[in-house]
Length: 159
Image (cartoon, rainbow, N blue to C red; front, side, top):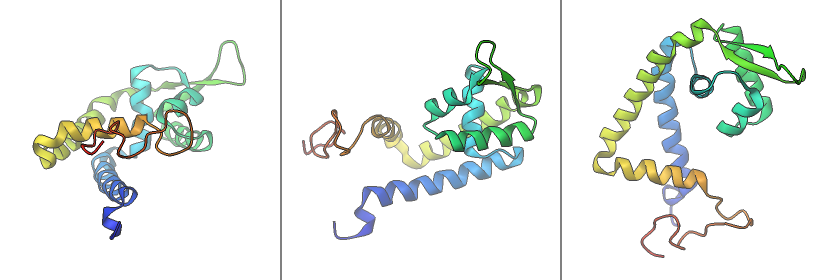
């Protein structure tokens, strides 16, 4: 690699910064961050999950998910209720206010997806597929199932 601009970590990081910036702008009118939106989105799919369930689904560590949940609760968007069988666990439920945000927040994120798709043109579906694939594989961490760049499993044409 001759230039930093050829480094995958740099490229994905810069792209992530741009997308996160646009997501923040789109969600700002509702005073919700992209991470808070992700938590709300999972609760809209299935209300009453634990913070541990949300963290596992979103790949967020327990300290971070606790802070996100605290802020959503303080904003009146969700509430904690004790688990019926395990009092150490609290399930998270949307409030009425949290429920009413689904339509406008989903619309904002749909606009962002549309913007990126327009920018990528005919390559948009390939981008989404490649990002899903990269998110699902372990690259070079020494565990079984490692993918090595150039082995053909990441859709490169060299392998």
